[in-house]
Image 1: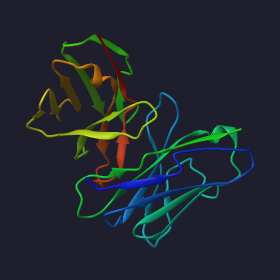
Image 2 (image 1 turned 135 degrees about the horizontal axis):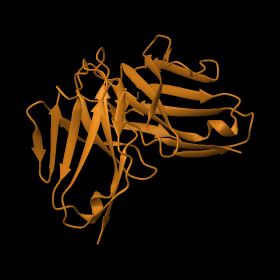
Image 3 (image 1 turned 90 degrees about the vertical axis):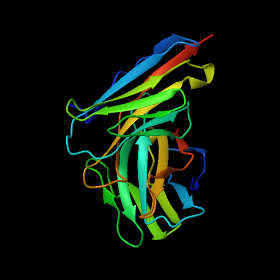
Amino acid sequence: GAVVSQHPSWVICKSGTSVKIECRSLDFQATTMFWYRQFPKQSLMLMATSNEGSKATYEQGVEKDKFLINHASLTLSTLTVTSAHPEDSSFYICSAGDRGLTEAFFGQGTRLTVV
Amino acid sequence: RKEVEQDPGPFNVPEGATVAFNCTYSNSASQSFFWYRQDCRKEPKLLMSVYSSGNEDGRFTAQLNRASQYISLLIRDSKLSDSATYLCVVTRPDSNYQLIWGAGTKLIIKP
């Protein structure tokens, strides 16, 4: 299957700092990328959908000014958690899709811990 | 009501046994259905798609009941390596890529 690379796989940061997570599609052009968040023992929750070259669409309850998403190219999308707080600690995961694919492919996920 | 509901488990099952999970979804217009497997602290991996006619892949059988809006997964001759969380996933009716996830059913296979 197609490969999606997500970095970093884990990060610990101090409260108030910003963290950038990258999601790259390595062997296909990802016209659409999804960012999910998963708290322990809970389901993956879609945060936002981004299409290359346009603004991301955020799900209800997700602050767009706090979770900045950039999808400037067909192979790279970034999620920046600004002014992180301990309650932002979670597992963040991206998935990428393309019109020619029948499924979305996931990055490895990023475990964010804010202390 | 959640869009996708699953029994969280855990299901503790002896090795070699058969185990079945069910999942219900609320939007009757949903088009595509999947079972994913997620190991602890890892990303989900697609286990199998679920078709109206039912489909089988080795020890795994998935079925869809549109009338009752539920999906099932049957695992036969369970192995220790089957221990994981199994996620039921449904696509939003207007998008084949936007996935609505169940919270998962945890399966523990015991020797």
